Image 1 (cartoon, rainbow, N blue to C red):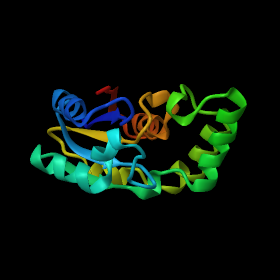
Image 2: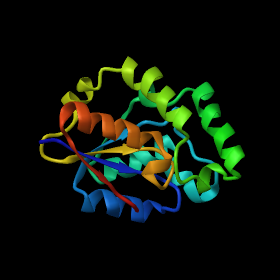
Image 3: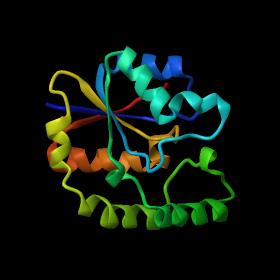
Image 4: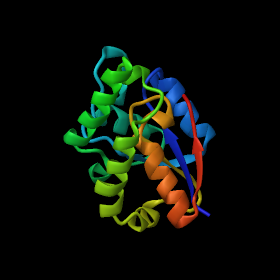
Length: 160
């Protein structure tokens, strides 16, 4: 059975991030960010080129699936809810119900997730990567839930 992990960037260093991947026996990182950069010097390691170089050194494969990222318009649905709740993106602990519904309809229903299975290593876990620390605050958890529901994969949320 294939295994899926989810991992975020916030509150992590490159060293802790890589250690978490090793501990979870990750062989492939699937980046599900629309833009593959993170603001802030402390997260420069998570920008696409630096991250890919670090993963290569660890012999972990990398793939980018932009089609699994929320659109800018959809992200604004979440930002509006964040503003109502008085939380910033880095402090968010949950996704807005309207965002979840639209993400499932506009993104997940439009993508054939079984194509990801062909890419996933049989002998290692695959990690879905985005920026939020908590999976409940990130669309990667919705992707992982859908993979578990439709394809029967195991999901483990890992924290660097």
